[in-house]
Image 1 (cartoon, helix red, strand yellow):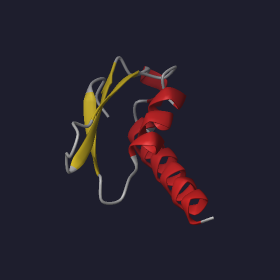
Image 2 (image 1 turned 90 degrees about the vertical axis):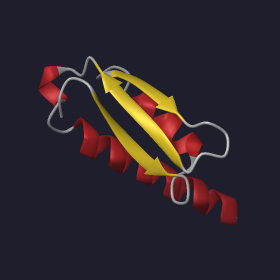
Image 3 (image 1 turned 135 degrees about the horizontal axis):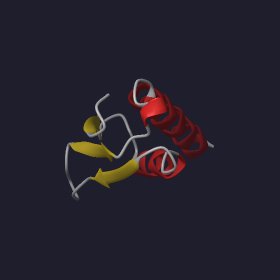
Image 4 (image 1 turned 30 degrees about the horizontal axis):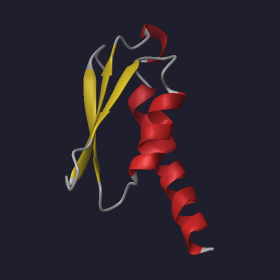
Length: 79
């Protein structure tokens, strides 16, 4: 991943709170911003100033973290 990049997450699958939690968890590795206007079909996550030692893995790891958070959110909603 270049030092600046973005990921797009469908709001049909991912929940905003999981994306926000992932952004917070990865804040020490990069500047992470989350953009999801009300009613948008996607949540856009932008990375800047990514640490060089994690630039090859940050996108995949962020996606895994966001998906795990979404799954946990949905599990708790079922209870």
